[in-house]
Amino acid sequence: MDEICRRAQQSDIAEMAKIRAEDSGTEQYWRERIERYLSQQVSPKEALRPRAAFVCANAEGIVGLVAGHLTRRFECEGELEWISVEKQARGRGIATKLLRCMAEWFVENQARRICVDVQPSNKVARSFYRKHGAEELNPHWMVWNDVGGI
Image (cartoon, rainbow, N blue to C red; front, side, top):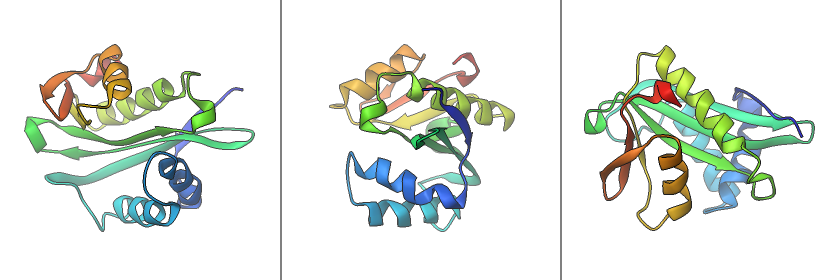
């Protein structure tokens, strides 16, 4: 199916939470977490106010999401907060579309050096980020020195 990426809306939060809960936590936890993150009621360490979230959707609904914000953490200018794709939609390039959409937002906001927190044991995510140009920053973080190249 053809998926399109667009800016997330308040009405998307329940579907976004369902996708996040496929990997950890509950839908209720993620509804609250996403709502509080997007409304800037909760902020990661050294996060700046500008932030954005995008969803990838097809005729059946939302199949993926990505979120990020501007930051000063690790001398980065932006931080990728979440990227998730519905389990049955994985392997179709949706994560790449989402990452590119988020990268465009970062570049539009003059943020090129972007970091992401990723567990050392998460080999799938680390491989995905490396494939798209990220490098090791420390055991728990990876960095794109210029996200404009994604």
